[in-house]
Structure formats: structure tokens, C-alpha cells
Image (cartoon, rainbow, N blue to C red; front, side, top):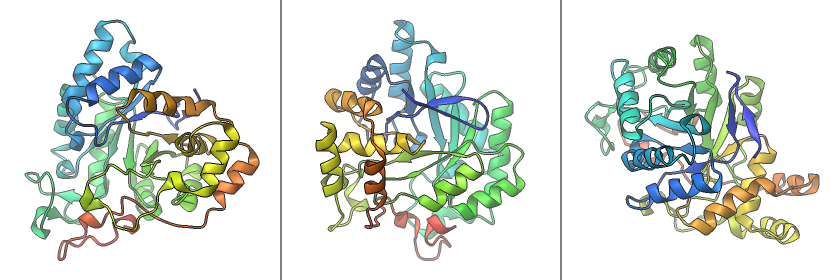
Length: 315
């Protein structure tokens, strides 16, 4: 398995297991199955609502001696209602309790969006706090404190634009090690990738297969399918693999991490075996030449009239 070296000197396995949308009663089994298959990178988040079950899975594989804690790379994320400086550490401590861990390998600010403390899912303008009320830089200072306390080995962000990263880099004491964003051939994020690499910030791709199982409210009637792209299908046929494996391997060849989600044992195995697919220069050029542009997780669910958030990816 290829590893990506972060600016703090730690190495993260390039292919991990995503757990967004993994249902209760399924996610724990999937995590245990994945670890037994060789996955060593597990991506979690408080808002996914399944960290307690994942924690039970971790405890079981540790107790059984399948792996030790040090063998795994475990990421989680700070939700939008815990951006205030007195809420960051407690939110992380709750995640550690749920996951039954003493530390994380990486803790991310999930979105550059702030909710009021008692709000889980914002549905009206009054549920939000502005970034003037809760500046990202203040939240980041507490992320730095979390790392200094040993609660996490590294800190980073998710869904951050170049503009937002520049602002953070201008004021931070500890540089973010990671930016987790949607990426795939319809959204290659070339400018963001270049900026992050120039500033020694690694990238993790979420929704690498298009998140076809995300909630209906987040979908559009005419959205395209990544695995139906003719070039992807042709490359898959040439390499005797699946289109999904091509899409996952593409990120590894770009020196990015990628976290496909599945609870299906066959798909779990296919996904991790994507690490063995050797795409050639022509394959990469072909995928880079796909001109269609599409964002599956477009952030519009945060854009409510009067809340001050418009086009969150340009913040």
C-alpha cells in the first residue's frame, strides 16, 4: 500500500475506508472486515452518527490482537456546532470516548461553516453563526491546543478553498496537514491540488465514486455517473479491473489519499486492491482530459436565505 507523507512527518495509507452513510448495524461489521482485509486507514466523523459502533469494532479487533492501535490511522472531524473555542476540546473528547481511543491520528474541521451549539442539522438562518462571530482562526487555535495536549497527532481541514487556506496559513502556528475534499475526474480540483502541494498540505478525496447512496435531498435528477464515463470503462477493460478501481487508483497516482465507502465485503476487497492497479501515463492523461465538471456534494444545503453563507466552496 502506498503511503502519503504529511508535513508533520507521519505517513498515512493512501486508501482508507470511508464511513459516511454506513448504517447502524452494518458499519461496525464493515470496519472489522476491512481491517482484517488489510485496511489501516479509517475515516470517521461525529456527524455520521456511528462512532460508538465503530469504537466497539476497534475494541474488538484490538482485544483479538488483529491489529494494535498503533497499526491504524484513524481520522475524525469537528462538527459545525462545536466551532466555538470552548467547545472544540469537549467535542474531540466525546469522539475519543465514542471511538474508545486515547488519541486520533488526524482531526479535521469538517466545514468552514458554524452552527449554534444546540443545532445538529441547521434548517433555518437562525441556526447558524457567522464566520465573524466564530472565526475559523479561533477554532483553529483550539485545534492546535488539541494537538499540543496529545489528543490528536495531526490537525487539518475539510472542504476548504484556496482562499480559506490562505487565511489560515497566515495566522496558524501549526500548519494543517490535510484538506479533505470531494475529488474525482469530474471534479479534479487541479488548482486546489497545486496550491496544497505547494504548501505541503496533503489531500484526501471523498465521494470518489460519486456518492450514489447519499440522501435524496442532496441529489439532482440529471446528475452523471462516474463509473459510466466511457474513458473510465475503457481503461478498466484494459487493466482487467472495475471502473470503481480505476477511479480509486487515479487518486493514488496523483499522490492523494482516497476514502471510498462500502459495507459490502466484495466491494471492500476490490477497493483496497485498487492500490495494485498500475495506471500508465496515457491513462492519466485520458482521465485528465475529461472536460465535464460536476460537484456531487455542492454545499447548497448550507445556503439558506439570510444566514450569510453563499457558495461555501468560495469562502
